[in-house]
Length: 113
Length: 108
Image (cartoon, rainbow over all chains, first blue to last red; front, side, top):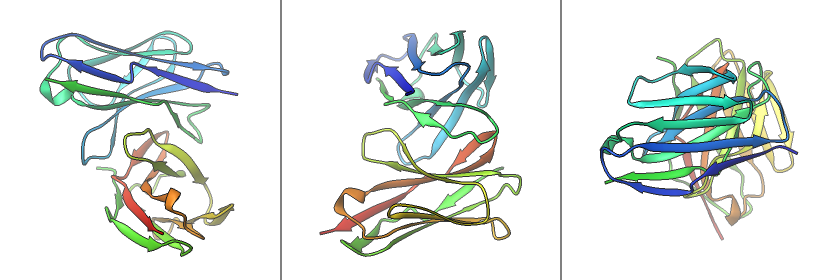
């Protein structure tokens, strides 16, 4: 069966510090991968998605970036965090884009202080 | 702007009753529709998906889709306190658009 791992679970970072969140999927190959952010009182906002190694699409312009160095690894990064980057970051995978059934990881709660 | 609208609630129902959650979407090109359950502080968990007009049943859950009205609903029969959570509706083709969720409270 497929599983998705996301870490860390909780992160407290000062403003201006860098960020690296990692997500890996097991039990499948060539998954579609997604990064979302869920801010308090707001819906899930799609940040990035990837259909293959090195292929990243950005949905929202911001100071975040994403990379997919391996088939089942998806990384969310920032060089300098802003207060507004605080939120609940969720990685998801789907077997294909056509039906796009997405399964979420446990999430990382990021607080930027 | 593609949107998915949900009543934020809270929706309160007594244990054993039917909970009815509703959602409308703006993108007529949407082909896939989902309901996720999210407990406080946790990540969303897929509970139902539907692609065609009509009803789809899975245990106590029934999803209903009406593409002409751009309307999706979720019925939860025999509601239990453990069903208390926020329910997210999502719709799309390719990327999904999520609603902000409806908070459901099932009272014992």
